[in-house]
Image (cartoon, rainbow, N blue to C red):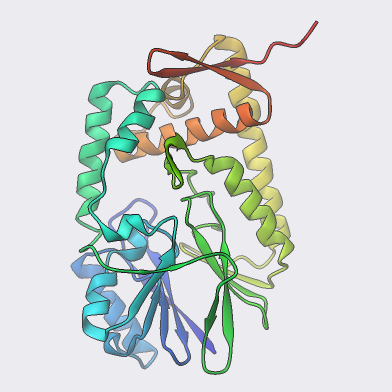
Length: 319
């Protein structure tokens, strides 16, 4: 099997997305890029560069339900007849118009003002332009095998960035296609999401992500190719850096809660990231909420409800 990296532009701050062509029968794409004319043109040119066309694609695997990774799936499917696969937990994002009601509840609990929630919803509608049309999908679960004529890759469920994020591992060569679970120069945002099996609850994004990164390290891949940017050649060093980065931010969060006595996720987001605007402010709230939840789950913080809003404080040491 040959694996080709196809670099496709996006309209987002993160920059281009890496799409991967697994060049063996059945011809398979991991991700496709956002639904923009520029991305469509580039995807076609990149496939031509490696001697292939969109019409030859037989299978599309989506690493997670973010527009920069799946927006062109419907267009590719219409031309090629390819089946689209995604993890069960992220499948609803591709199969129907997203309902913002669950996110609105989570943002209210985070202490986000109503006007800001409305702005976030408008930003989500803007991103909707890049999601493409809804489509039917086949679902994947952890440890599923995707079979090729002479080889196979294994699905590794790596929840964190989204609940249904996946990687693909070719065990014979220890080659890992990590999508956005591992990124060489940044850590993926632990996005604010409802739990896929308990919509009224928050998904524990940061705790899940750290477990996923640790699990990938134990797989001992020799090459990690990512969803954005450069490859990772030393996964152990990278995973140490991820854990250290998270630990430093946890220390800062605990210090801020100690100083302020109580904090909401909105308060923490404005303190940690005072200058961000628009969609980046939603990402800031996601990061803040994820760290507060992680500290609570580690027994460092407690949470109480004040109306609809959750307020975090330090766990008091027992005398």
